[in-house]
Length: 207
Image 1: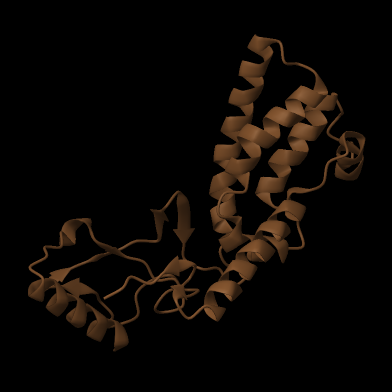
Image 2 (image 1 turned 45 degrees about the vertical axis):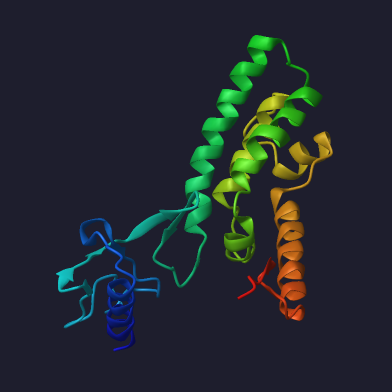
């Protein structure tokens, strides 16, 4: 089993470098869809341990502000966006409340504040999860926050279509911004791969 060999190699490395790993705080997350047995659980006889201590198998984990869950056959990393939608909604309500207190109630001001304080939250890490969200035929949870804001700031009813609410403000769906970020990220990776002295955009350290 490849993972068993990886853990053995990792154990040998830590022992050689005199490093200590807290097994109680170490988790394993199976990324492949369905988990080890195809139903989200470990396959029969499958287990993970470090230095003889069993490791907890987690269904999700948070890394650098993004919540990663087990991959979905239909949606991939789109679950990251669902968590960001909740955070973006909270940021949007806080922004609108503060703007109201300061008297920044004009539509133009509200849109500018949304792009400064809410859009970065909704689009955080879109270079990773953006592809899976863009492939979904339905509206993403992140874009629904944006559309709700566009309707609310204009006082439009829920029945108003997203196209109308966006057009009236001269705004584009967030997907347009995600595509720009994805292309820039891809170009950076390509440039890094073409430069033999750099690895993923970071200069190699001289030995």
